[in-house]
Each structure stands twice: as structure tokens, then as C-alpha cells.
Amino acid sequence: MAKKSDDHDEMKQCSGTAGFWEERGVSRRDFLKFCTAMSAALALPVSLAPKIAEALESDSRPSVIWLEFQSCTGDTEALLRAANPTVGEIVLDVLSVDYAETIMAAAGYQAEEAKHKTMKERGGKYIAIVEGSIPTGANGAYCCIGGKSALEIAREVCGGAMATITVGTCASYGGIPAAAPNPTGAMGVKDAVPGATVINLPGCPVNTDNLVATVVHLLTFGKLPAVDGKGRPQFAYGKRIHDNCERRPHFDAGQYVEAWGDQAHRKGHCLYKMGCKGPETFHNCPSQRYNEKTAWPVSAGHGCAGCSEPYFWDSMTPLYKRLPNVPGFGIETTADTIGLGLAAATAAAFGVHGVVSAFRKGDESEGAKEE
Ligand code: SF4
Ligand code: F3S
Image (cartoon, rainbow, N blue to C red; front, side):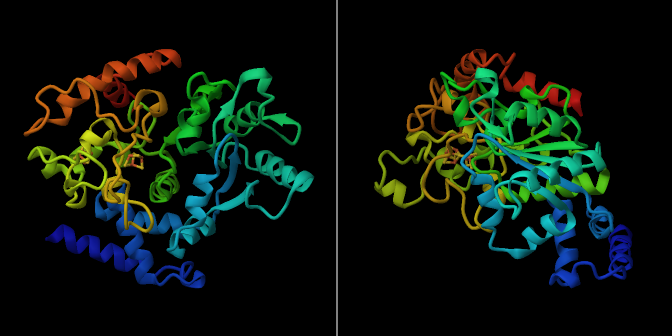
């Protein structure tokens, strides 16, 4: 109890600081609630909420360069379509977005100048956010901006950044453009810019709540959150979808949808037999959800496609076929047992892309080492 009251005192102390957020239409109460929610989202003790508040109220506004390469612009759309204005304000007001070619008013030379000015004046201190994959085939000719290839731009910008956050599966692992036979030689930032400090936020699209939480961690602690073996923050990708799914009791009870629109589908039974890849996918979709936390694919009646896993378009397809070789399928089968079947298929797909190992256990121990 004493601890709780200490936390409360700290929050009260903090609430006396400047009205940065009130000026932007966010009430003090909502701001402090946001800071507490952030500490929970990042799996931090609530006692760190005042530290988060302090960091977000700081006068220094870190610069951001937002690059877009081979993508559908879904991640920018996800950010801009957020109905809750506080999320957009928190990201955009705390940060100084100096370059974002898709949405900035400037164009051409003026836009390029803004980017170069930030790189020159804020070298090593700005944040790079990358959306879309980087084509490396034909000397990078498949995607050029301002006379430079995406590969050159990524090396320049991400190489000089304090940290790079990849948003979406394309920037993280190559995405749909990298699907076999990968005609443009597309790859994710970590592979294209070796040595850069990169954290991956895969998903189609990125969940903006996870982007905000990652930025908040960076601003508060001056470093990126702990990652797993696939470079994803553990706070958002540490748990298997299947283990947190609201349809899990139906899986355990052997109640499955057999055809779209059948009685089981109408009753919200498990989508495993319809190809759900939740047993092999790590992401916080069931808890964080999309569209202002209202829905996620499984709640809408569609199985998880595994979009936050590397090379899901090759390793998780056919999308509507159930995971292979499931021993003891049905009653009380654990997700760990089911995962074994897909691991072999995933490893084969990874081999194609030159990635050493996709096996979860190996990845997790790598992640532990990185931590
Ligand atoms: Fe949920 Fe899919 Fe697992 Fe069924 S198989 S419990 S729908 S994650
Ligand atoms: Fe993607 Fe599956 Fe979540 S398809 S959005 S990881 S439920």
C-alpha cells in the first residue's frame, strides 16, 4: 500500500508541471491517464508513469524523417485515420516530423532540403521511421526518389539516425514485394542497412498504438525497448495470438467453423480449420486491437493471416488451409504442439530468403542474448 501512495504522490508532483498538453487540447487528466496506459502497454511499473510524463513534456522535440519506399501507404493511412486525436497529437506534437514525403506540404527540392538539413544538423539524434520495403535489384532502379535509389536513401538516413523504427511488414522483412520470386530483390531495413539501430514493428498495417509506445519508450529512456529474435519489441510481440484469442475456449472444446457462414461461424467458434494462423503468430492484436481498439481480424470473423511474421506470404499460405500436421488436433491441444508443424514450412521459406533460422526456440534465445 505504501508503494501505491508513493506512486500517487509522484503523479501529483508531476501534474504540477507546465501545461504542454492542455495547450494542445489534451486535458491534464487524460494526459496522465495516457502516461499510465503507456507504462502498462510497455509492461513497466506504474511508478514510471511520471518519468514518461516528464519525457513527453520536455521542450526538446526530436526530429523525425519518415521514409516511404515499396508499400501501399497503409501504415501512413493507419496513423492518419486514427479517430482519437490524442494519439496523432502525441506523436506529431512531441516529435518534429521534418520530412514525410507522402503527407508533407513541401515537394521536390524543398522537401529534399528539409531532409538534408535534419540529417546535417541533427545527425545521430533524429529518429528514422521507414514504411515499405527496399528494392535492391537492378542497382536499386525500381524505387528512386530525388535521383537516389531507396537503398542509397535508407543507408544515408538510417545510417545516421539515433534509431530506426520500421512500420509494417514490408519495411521490417520485405513484405509482399519480397514474396517469391521477389522480382525487385526487396528486403527489410535491417538487411538493407547492416549496422543501423533498427526495431521492427511488423503488421499489415502497423498498429499505431505500438508505434506510439515504442516512441514513448525511446523518448523516456533514450533507448529502444527490448526485442525478440526477429527484432520486434517484446511488449507487443511477446505473446502468441492463439494464447490470448477470445475464441480459444472453442478451440479447446473442439468447436470449429467448417465453412464460412455456417452455424459455428455465426456463433463465433474457432477459425482454426478455416486457416487461422494464430497458433504460430506473435502479436498483441487480441488485446490492442485496431480501429480504436474496437476490432481485430478474428473478432471480425476471419482467421489470422500471420501478417506480423517474416515471410508470412510464403510460409503461411495457402491462407485458408489449416496449419499442417497437427498432432492431437482438438481438445486441449497446446499451441506449442501445433507450432511444430509449421516450423518446418517456415524454415524452408526462410532458407529461400537467406535467413539462418526461423525456429522459435532459437529465435527466443537470440532475443534473450540481444536483451
Ligand atoms: Fe483464435 Fe485462431 Fe487460435 Fe482459433 S486458431 S483460438 S481463432 S487464434
Ligand atoms: Fe495480422 Fe493476424 Fe494480427 S493477420 S493483424 S497478426 S490477427
